[in-house]
Image: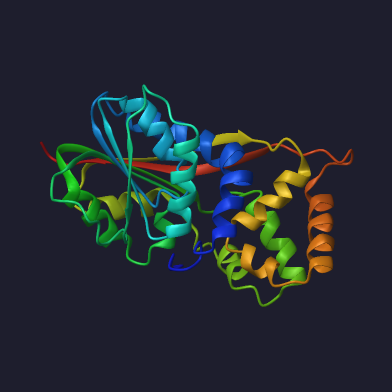
Length: 276
């Protein structure tokens, strides 16, 4: 398993994540996950490992101005990027967003204080997934819902598989490329269900969900790599090497006409309930 501490700790990674990954990849998945949980108007929602706020923003729209949304993450740069985005593009009908910098195993909220907990692509970065699920259970009210999404083990994961393959040929010592290749950032439906059951949840379901995503250009898809933990590795190169790296990656990702190609991505969605 991969510890999330520090992997998204640089401001440049957070900004590139928000600019090049969130609109084309994480926003569409976030809307799907929020619909999966179906939070109600006026409810209190906690988004764990919120990153730059894809699920946070979708949940704020779903629960409306009478609701409350709390975005938690261990990475201050990610939360700062989220705060900037909310300040620049807030809507009167959305719930206000509160920021909470803390670990997923030590959420700084009282017991039984939220109605819905989301965790979108965060569990694989957390070493003790059952402990995380128990913490989700602790902060949920009786009858509350948890909804998580992770990449599905054994399924093609583009553009990240493409990023990792490219990096392994040019930066063979890349720590994150090794993590991508050994499957530690993906889970099976059974593994997701087991984590939620271990946390105490009942009525647990897990299923495969598929979504087709596509960037406007291959160049923007390539730049998305800088919004991953590969970002600091790329930044360690000199400017000429970075430009060559990006150009070669763009060519690899594009079709024969130089255009971006669609990717069918597969996630595991898991949901559980706290007994009423």
